[in-house]
Structures are given as structure tokens and as C-alpha cells.
Length: 349
Image (cartoon, rainbow, N blue to C red; front, side, top):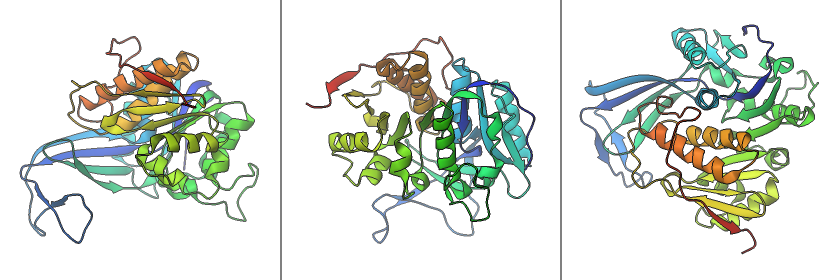
């Protein structure tokens, strides 16, 4: 792999995937309920036939680039650290990040795999099916991380799997003393007094020592299914999940609930909010990333003010939902937005 030279200091560096999204809407989409399958309806196409598409869009995505876009638009000096393929899509993603004023000097390029791609099949309503090719992004390993160039106030780790969550081999470099690149980065931040926010995927949550890693995280962001998976507590038992999460992670805990809003705990209080009733939903691609990065933007800028963090996170997500693709609707610094009502409750109640 190879990098562009980078020796700057940043406000925040994001880690995560970089993806080329292809959003398609077929003219005729059949939804069926198959009794031997999952409870959800399934998308069905006649095998061996040609399916007409009435709309197709191309957009960049991936948790690493989506969040980097928000941080840059919010006025932070931002860099993205990840891996793309040495192909047209990889070059297009890098060029788009540059236009967004995101530094790409920490982006690695490889010819071993193509850039990640997602084919997003949408129909009527908000549901969608995604065909995901997990390519170059999953090749990021500890040896590919430019440790000496990670000069920043904050790190943001989005969902990644592949080599990112595989244990170190016996012959690998042992300078960081950790078991996976994911843990290496958390330990690096902890050792160098860098604040760290993590929005992990199932691969990271499945690590046997995730609870130990979580103790070093400043802001942990999960959706309600991931929080239930980690705590082994049913989704509907929200307060019990938050109390258990407070035991696992002493930092700020954020649990997103889609259309049901968000719940945040700082260890002493629980903050909850619902999204605006009149929000326009055109495309849900990147909605979680837009909330997480919007939340963290105001959390950093307002010195840990959770209420203002929730408000910007929610507004950034509403903006994202109003446009096709993960980035067109993101808010810029100083842009006016509707502020949602925040409810605050003592955690002991």
C-alpha cells in the first residue's frame, strides 16, 4: 500500500470504510413473505431476467468518509485514515474528500482488492436492501496505519471488520502491545492523551475483550440492536441497557433508535429526544453516520454539552435523510436548524 505525504496536526481523524454507493430504484419491486425465512418481507427478482431501473444515483459512502465530511463542514481540521482500491472509484472518493477539504494524506491505496461498493436497492417507502462488496477497506492492518502522523485532538473510529479486528500474529510487530488494530488505535489514543469516539460494528463488539477496550473510550455510539447485543439485555429494556453500559464504559454513551430518537447517558443523567415529526425522508443512507458526527461536532465545540450535541446530531441526520446519498444534506457550520426538545432524567430515578 502507499500513502500521500502528510505531516499536519488535526482536530479530528476518522477511521472507517470508504465506499462507492450505487443507489437504484427498480420499476417493479416485488415483496414477498416466505414462511421458512426471517419475519421481514423479502425482495424478489425473477432469476435470469433483466430488471428495468427507473432511477440510478452514484454517491460516496462509508462510515469513515461520511463522518469526515460532517466534521469538515462543521469547521474542524479533518483527515480520513482508511484504505481504497487503486481504481476509478477509489480516485473519485479521494477527489471528493479533497473538495470537502478533508485531508487525504492518511488514505492508503491498494491493488489487492477493489474499493468497497454497495448496491442500494430501494422501493416505495423507507426500506432498502443493500448488496455490499467489502473490498479494500477490510485490508487495513496495524502495519498500514501511519502512527507517527496521527497528530490530532480527537480520533473517531467507525465500523470496520476484516484485518482490523483480527488478532496479531506471533511474527507481527509487537510495539503497540495490543491484540487487534482496533485495540491498538484505542490504546494509542489513551497513551497519547487523544480523545476517542467509537461507533463500532458487530465485528468489534464481538471481540472477547471489548469490555476492557470500552473503558478507554470517551464517547461510545451504538444503535439499540448493538447495545442489546453487547449487554445481552432485550432492546425494550432501555434503562437496564444504559445502566449496564455505564458499567462497561465510563465515557458518554449514545444509543440511536432510528425513528424513535436517541438516548444518551453521561453516568449521572439520561438525555432523550425524538426526531422532528415533519422531517422529510428521501433516503436513509448514512443517517447513523450523520447523527454520530453531528453529535460529536457540538460535543467537542461546546465542551461536552450533551443537549446541544443531541440537537446538532439530530438536525444533521434530518438533513441527511432529506437528500439522496450520505453527504448532500449534511449541515454546514453556522447553518440554521430546528432544535428538538431534550428530556433529562436523573439516572437513579
